[in-house]
Image 1 (tube, rainbow, N blue to C red):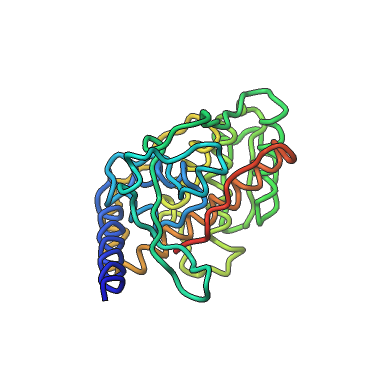
Image 2 (cartoon, one colour):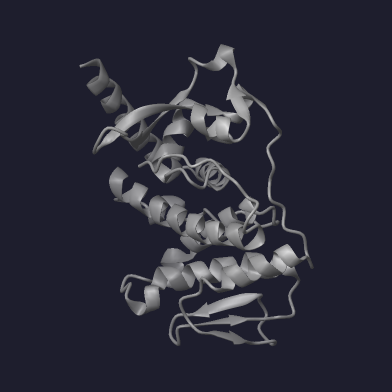
Length: 268
């Protein structure tokens, strides 16, 4: 009975967190930062941690911190936040404790920072462009680093922009192309998906230390008006999933053999 009550409470907190993220621009931007810093965790679990820990930045289970040569402080072992993870004993989900970086000690965390005109940046841009689902054309007269044309279903790239501007611009436009899904998404319009595409680009830039403007959240409330919590969570999940896959491909491209990470359980 106590376990059922804990799950119900966690579900309620998760729904409340999702609604807050998708109605409050400040919380939405906080979510993007937290999701970018924890790319392997689901949107629902990031929302759940945000509700429980207003100071959360990077978090993980004890096992994940151990894999990163860090350990949870003894004084913090009872202060973890609850998330949902897949049960190791069968189907379904169980509640698991995760701990924020500040609740741990050990080896310093490394953060990937892509530098302009480096071989890593070149590899990252190549990996990013490979995620385009439409043909790519070069347009030196384009007044932007990149632009997706939904009518012709092609992605134009201006090669004259500096690496960091190019990365930020291409990431947003590739997100647009992927949301359009080669035309299969009949609900696609640039206006309706602009915030989602900007959010994917922003998370990718933050993950790799590339300067990027925060997305325009002025129409956030209107975009999600009438959405149930599960529908809001699905929308956030689609952004998280896209950013995670593209980001993972970039990480493999820039450090194909040496980068080791924890493998947190896939969670909802």
